[in-house]
Amino acid sequence: MALPDLPIEYHSEARGVPETLETEARRHLRALSEGHKDMTGASVTISRPEHGETPHLYQARVIVYMRPEHVTASEKHEDPEIALKGALGAVERQIRERRAKLKEKWKRPDLSDPARRQFQE
Image (tube, rainbow, N blue to C red; front, side, top):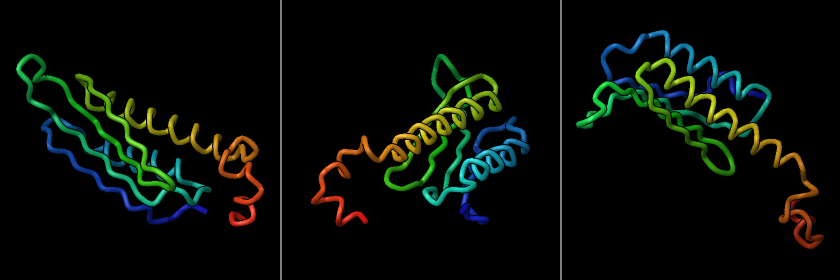
């Protein structure tokens, strides 16, 4: 069951970032949480780090608050939309890999010990 009101924080401190990126990030993260209870919230930040040699890059950082550990991804690109899509794609890949791993209970060391298993059930 997905949380219909999954709290998603969005911050953009850079100029030239389209407002549609916030909608796209929210849609993508809500779709990723659909049918799962492990996500408790997310944070999306788009900034333009000012470094001497690369002042034209945008950085997108996505943090997904989920159980048992949070997932983070960051991407830099000249286009803020591509940076955001890269960070969202990396987060999605990590979450899907983690969910697939947790589904394989027979491979989990914490459930392989019969003494521990009785406390898990």
